[in-house]
Length: 110
Image 1 (cartoon, rainbow, N blue to C red):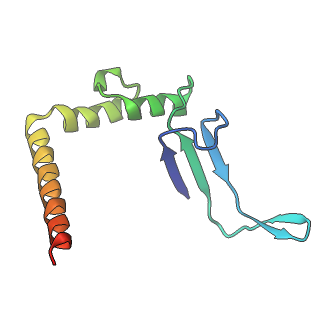
Image 2: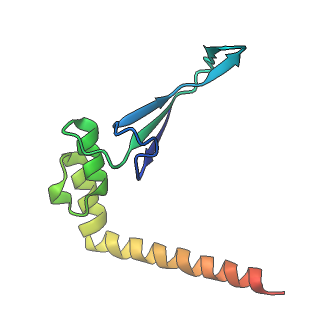
């Protein structure tokens, strides 16, 4: 099963989730193509008062204290507020940026 959490309501139906099924057109008839694949799009803008709405709220939260789910809040605090982790993440991002800049320069070189 594949889940895709989208930033916006890509299906524009105002629903929290959109299960996608595959069908085969056989003449005028559509037959479920039961290949075992299951895809669910999750509307990242959804903010209902249910589990999905609360989770989408938490995914967009900048302050772990405003989150609904303690497990997610605890992990967010670790990555956002632990001084050593923040330093490490900043270093990794800086290294990635420098590597991307070097690759771009190499592509420009004749």
